[in-house]
Picture: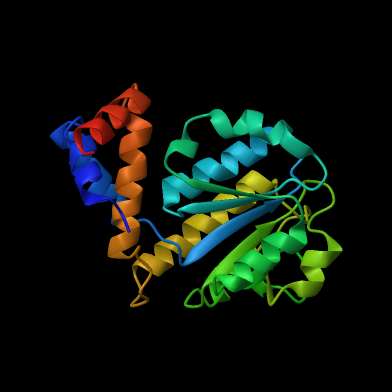
Length: 219
């Protein structure tokens, strides 16, 4: 449960415009879809995917650091991480298990011949969209455990797109269709309160001192 007194206290340090903006953005946030990236070697692509999640309203990004370790952290400090929840996993198996425990179906984005075309994809089901490395694509483990496969229709000679481009196209299409549907895709009231509290903390300078003062006053 969110500490409403703390939330009200911290939001007192925000401008009215900032508080209104938080609510406007949160109205379009969703956990109905989530994104997972697997061992992306070119770190700027991870950052680009994160920004696409933020821009198009996907609240959580899941990052698997099975091969390239903590170097990805360098790219998680570029701004959008203040507004998107970053979940990190050391193995793809842990990530898949976590997604399934949350009720997501596992969708592998791939130009695989049996893939569902983007415009035919059933977005009404909670889905975790997995994106793989630039050269190798998704691991065999993801491909074997996937509940479905998804691809972008292409009519040229090139068989695949850069991961950041693919993610942007797929996320934009699915979130746009989702918002025009009758699916219950929005965050719950409790989730919105949680995000308001986190975003307030991420916005306020010297937040540690301000929180300490709050707890001293409310002992």
